[in-house]
Image (cartoon, rainbow, N blue to C red; front, top):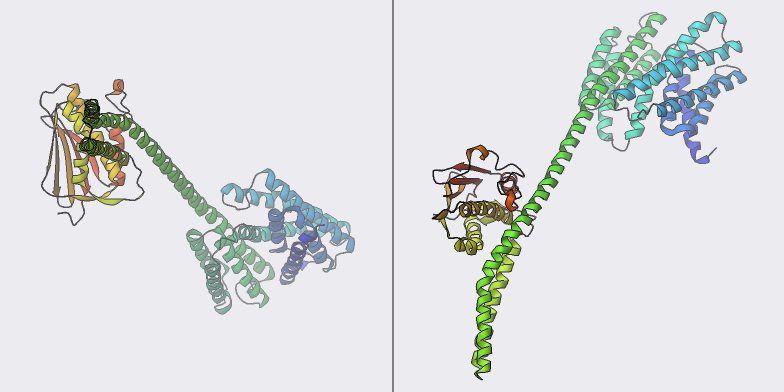
Length: 540
């Protein structure tokens, strides 16, 4: 035997012997047979299911000492101890075989444990142990049937009451709020003590109703462990009332008192298990549902992030074209400067003034190109925190970025804003929204070969709401697809490598990040996109 397990074995043997002695002494019994709650069986089963085979010696030792000191012969005491040890081994094996959880959080766990106690463990224990007692002349044949029932009933009462409580405690002891637990326990103890000892309520049914009502309430608002704890408190106070011969379980005959006590305890057990598992499964369902919702939300966020990246990649193709247009003029200027420098060299006119002219103007053109790169690089920079930014400046910057392409294609962009508007959000993401809408307008204007191509941007405010409208004169969006343009992967430009993500991600950015709205309508001239967002109170 491993010496590390010795304290646990000694503890279980001590609990088994002391609680068994108390159970037998309080009620009319025949040696170690009692027809009421037999507490040590609850401790033995809970320890066996939680700690496993290493506590079997503790069960054997506790049962042997209990039987021997109740004047059972030495050999019969050993045999009964072995039977109880065998019972614990069966419990461990069947609990694992049917994959029952020691946390007792499902209906399967509760029913499985109950059936195991009622129809496997105690029938075996009652029959074998009483057969041993009969064989060793510790009980008479006439008493054998009663002994079977008393043994079976007393043991299941102990296991149904104590085993779930101990399993729940051992499984969750690190998570308990012990101050709250102690407070609730003291209040309920005081409540039951007043009912049974102070008021000495003699009606068992009334006592049960008053006690069970509180237990249902605590199971509903806390959990099954609190209900199990309250049941044990109620049982302990009832034991004390029996010891002092007062209250509902001392007012009648021995038989009536025993029946009333058993029904009282059994009602608590049933109520705790039925209501406890119902509320626990509801809470488990809510936790599972919340976990699924959280997982789906996270999955949706990841998918949106992927779509945003895809949209960024698609926009980068557009921006590369814009960079090319932006660089064309400075590159032409650099080429002219270079030709001028070479020409002066061949004519022997390359002096300090010419070198300085080349240096100043080439540096100016290179800085212009570098500034262009910085602008486009910042456009795709990820942002971690929201900040206040000027809508007017973002719109103007986006127009400037598009200017080389719009000028090349003869598109006139008009920006109308009578005042400065400031909002809170991610400026780069908002810029991408504008770029998506502008690019769509530009593409449709070019595709339809509109003569006087126009894009009009207007900033207005009504109350606390800012309206940013982007209109074109390309004839509008076909009515049959107007309600689909914000769907993911819907595109009318697939033959031109359209991703169908631009407007979808734009709407996500406006709705989720800006807490606003993005929608589209048609005007007599063309399409009109409207962005509604809340402005800052200090807008001027």
